[in-house]
Length: 276
Image 1: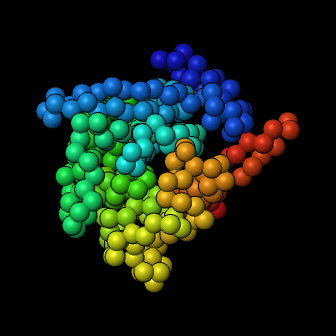
Image 2: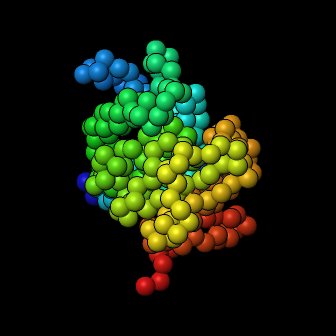
């Protein structure tokens, strides 16, 4: 047991000296889980990203992995949010990007009250997430599945908000990239960050007023970007702005402040606890 812990600490020390850019590229383990929910006769693919040293610490019983769930936009694959997955994994999260849509699924409802018309899709998303979490508990048991960070783009943002409303005790933070149909939670229990595009407008009542956001601590970030640019398909400038704001949001709500250290001419991003 002690030999295992010593080995883990040694590996962590090696990875701890790596610059942030290197962590994003080679110190993160990526895997794809092709799962099958027999109760619904439905395949559920989950793309995993986790920092190797954080996983080692968790497996050795030294720590617990934080957990983030990424929900893709309609017609966008779950694997097309690596710019978010890598940043979260680099911070010590177990990141699960869930593929919600299958080619055999009915098309996205475009008629009538869209929130109501898309309810079956939101319900299916909740079932996918709960199934994936159940499977992950077997694969990565040393993770905190009771304090999730939910992220989603467009329809995936609506699924994220919908899930948080259905399971408020499981979700601590919600990050949406231009969700359009499901209204923001107004209970003040979850920290909320939402990026808004310059070309698509949400339904009435989805985004609270500026006064309500200020009162509830909801952070709405308007981007000079199109709705479709908020995935790996978008330009680097847009992704960099999203990542920078996401880091600030996580730092503020996890009690950390980011610093950039110079290690032998190499820039390394680090996180230090906020002063009491």
